[in-house]
Length: 132
Image (tube, rainbow, N blue to C red; front, top):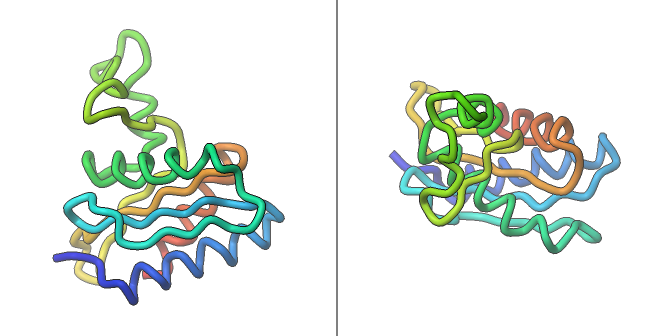
């Protein structure tokens, strides 16, 4: 099952709404179940360097079906996934990537958000994920 374009656009809109509430400018990426980019938005004034980070956060969340912040905890020295960020042409292992699920709980894609603190990135991504 894949996220539809309409669903991906709804996720983008929710992320933009939360970003405006937090007064931050974000790059927002949505990937489908195969980790293929489905929708992307760069808010006016968002950092150009965060484009790649947002996409990689979304892909990382989908590759491992968990929030990127959780992967980050597991990738610290001495932990089971240490150095995983060097796989898959580069992963992002800090907060801001969240899997997207349909009403049946099946993962249909993921959202990645970058452009502020990791706390704000995660808040926006999590809010967007809840919009499905």
